[in-house]
Amino acid sequence: MKREKENYISLQEATKYCNYSQEYLSLRARQGKLEAIKLDRNWMTKREWVEKYMAKTEEYNNSLEALKAKNFEKENYISLQEATKYCNYSQEYLSLRARQGKLEAIKLGRNWMTKREWVEKYMAKTEEYNNSLEALKAKNFEKENNII
Image (cartoon, rainbow, N blue to C red; front, side):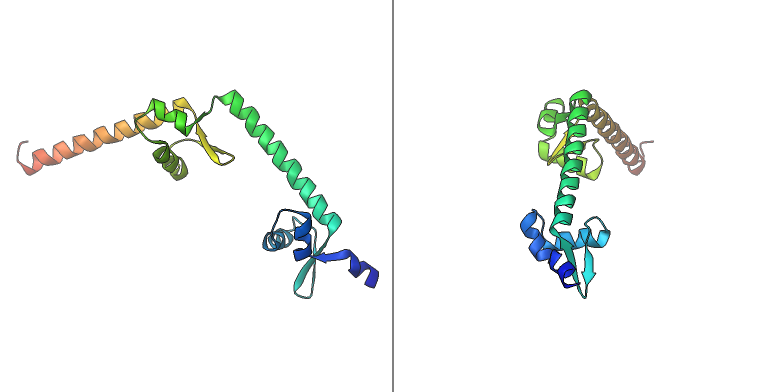
């Protein structure tokens, strides 16, 4: 039994073999993603289990990035900076609208990417909204001033 216990390492020690914090490893252990056992109040793992987890996450991340890159090339995505050429909005504003879900966009790494047709669709939608708002304001103005 003692020999088995020696193979286990604390999550703090496990951080030496990966780029994750003890708290994150604890979360992954609780989720069942990192193989670990709970001894008393502490999560314990093995170096092999940490290396296995790291290999699995690296493989997943590489396949995800490859898929994104493949789709990125095929789908004609543009950066938000480039998208500013097709509208009167700044990159920051387009980023805000992408985060709000108002502008169709995808996140590739740290950057938001969109398509020209998505920007044009957003512009058409905002123009339609502004036109209906102006019509409503004119109608209310006429009503208030008894022009009707």
